[in-house]
Image 1 (cartoon, helix red, strand yellow):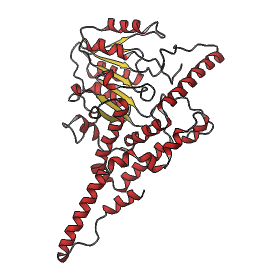
Image 2 (tube, rainbow, N blue to C red):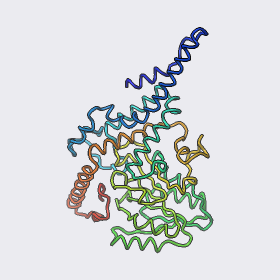
Image 3 (cartoon, rainbow, N blue to C red):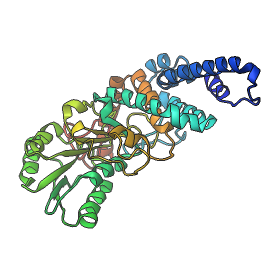
Image 4 (cartoon, rainbow, N blue to C red):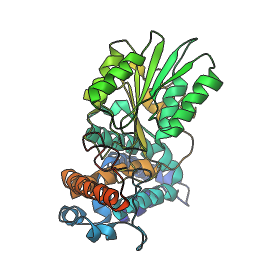
Length: 385
């Protein structure tokens, strides 16, 4: 907080105009102020990267020894009598991440103009760089969006589909995305056909599913829209096998990976999807309204944000960074969210959640005299139906 106060004081205008006799001193003072401002701007990435531990000293050491389960409820603001089971929809941010969010909101309100114009652009790219490292992606290929639906819409509204073109998806597609596809094909461009492949779960084998999808491709297929994890069932699609099939026919692939970050290990460079949308507020311990869009360089000149603003016609990163006035704090907290996750231990969280989910699924199926929908090799590790 002291550094925030010093920034605010440095930007306060002088109440006394300079006199002619003190012109030299005033010039020296201005030079010192400029030097201070440059130092402040250079320190911006450190402020972003160290936000969790600067707000909560010793946090990393504490988290490394955190006992998972009931003992860690104090790290969250969940109601005492509530057992929250729907992280795959919304998730909940831990207290250190929410403190980082408040830190950036306060920083913005102390001097909105300086924060939005001078500090925030550097902070956003620092945050995107940290996120790209976690995703094994190039920083210049990653931009922030408020949610997965917005990211999917940005891609779908940017593509130039022509008469008789087909968009292929599965019946497992998330309903909001399916609505976007229906609007794209039936309302905005009525000449585009939406082809839905009907997949019955559980499948017999991944090779059977891959063949079913391959058989649905026609010479008119121009785009494939695939989930990484089907939201309502937790079914994991074999993207490593599906994407090459489409690429062999020069068909780009848009992946709805809303539920994957933090739940599945991701290497977007190796995966090879042309467009990948993910969230940070489900399994990455991020704040709401923090999601990302990854676009390969081949399509960055094509994809535009849903909102057109001051950066129109500039680079892919610039257009998505300037979306009018909005609260950028949610995006900036991804650094603290990743810090939190990695401090607790990604592999430790994975092992705990998967073991708990396997037990809970079998327990409920036995109690309710029903069956778990998917075998372990088909379902996401933190989801069970």
